[in-house]
Length: 155
Length: 290
Image (cartoon, rainbow over all chains, first blue to last red; front, side, top):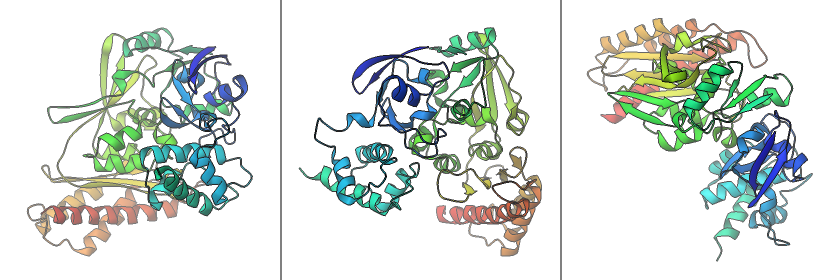
């Protein structure tokens, strides 16, 4: 099955098994391994990407559902060597341990801050409810979101 | 595996008539899990998540039509007037899941735990089905949801949406689970007060083979409000003992089983608590409005 989609601003094509997920296409066909493959059932959020601007679990999107559509992945966030403010904030706040959940969390946090630049803690917790992290205990992740919000608000 | 990508509903229905084995793929939040784990290998998939005809809603002569393809996120941002539906939508999965999951998908999957289903049952919704040539068939929710993961959808039909009569009065959806997000309901309940018909309608999720109503509890509550004069005067006190009795009758309507998420006894208890609370919230909301 040939799928054509715009990934991070560039039109790409991939020939995948007709039952493949968008996550499989991104990782195995296009080599975009930033989105992680963990639970394959939408429980962990590690494969979060944007499909036509909406935050989704790439493992729950059928590859054909992304045909002729736009996907943005974690790879689009850093500009060359310059990290996205959310990525910087995660490093500064120590919100990164093993790092497996980090790309999905970064994408979910960018999505949140694009919609709500000054979220309160309950909003942050609700927005990140679909992203599991087994290392950090979440406290530093919450700190990182607050720090990122400050960074992005600064002129 | 054949993959169909129709651009319009008509095209999708023609494909369904020609290839009735094609499994409709809406948001994918249920179906993709089965595919990813090799539990389902359908001969064909019919991608319907982009069909504009399913992503709509409208009001017609006091009735409301909710398109099958509306995502929970869209309901949250656009349909605030249906508070129980919004509360149920907000309790679905996570933001990622709510951006994809649809009410039509909930209906098609027909899990007894589908969060939107008790709401549709309490609204007394009809499920609108459509087949090639635009032929529609309407079934009351209980004739559509016939068992656990079983519906009366015909092989050549798709779910167009759900339709119900808009009523005046407060209502709520509540759900018991082991955490605040990403949780399959252990028990859920929707209660709606219909001020004009003087009805109390209660539906239960996750405590039976499919969604259930609690008709005895409903009749009891309507009678209690009548006896207390509360239908005419929202400030008229309703005895606490009647709320307790209502909870008992709600629990009696449940047909729960023991499973990995909870015991039947716990689920019945949850129904009792959810029922009593939902009615007391509705009465409090009516007082606030006056």
